[in-house]
Image (tube, rainbow over all chains, first blue to last red; front, top):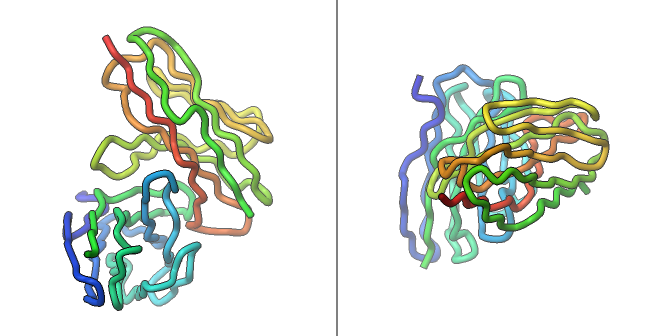
Length: 111
Length: 111
């Protein structure tokens, strides 16, 4: 099993550009989440999904969209990038909704 | 609002020098408390889940304990390869896939 995979590993965007961060898992987990990690802030939940077709907002959802059309994939879309979205983004999946298994992260810089 | 506070922020130990990391939490009904290890540039790696006060879990040189207000991660006779940031997270009752993280303790173990 590859576990949780994320692409790209690094990305630089200009303010106002849009992009999609990809996340996939091959463990048949129903639960998937997106977090951002900033220095001194800890990991903060952006959006999460409890199954295909079902998504909900986390603590910091503004400026991000998600959809879950399959169990395996949970992409995160930035609609119009802002410098405040410079961060490291982690995708996670869970079988039970408790223990979460994280991907390697995407480091995003918005200039 | 759920809150997690970890201390100390950073800890430097010599190889073999045992110590403990603290995680204080407030949560509206605890569904689970989680410990993760994070190496630089990587995603968090799941270590333990604790569900109720009095519970203990062990893995190699690490032992996690839980009370109604805090959790400790005890590191016995650490080795340099234990150097990492250790993250604590809580999940409230009635929530699924939503974790609240602390900002972590950065542990360095020297020879």
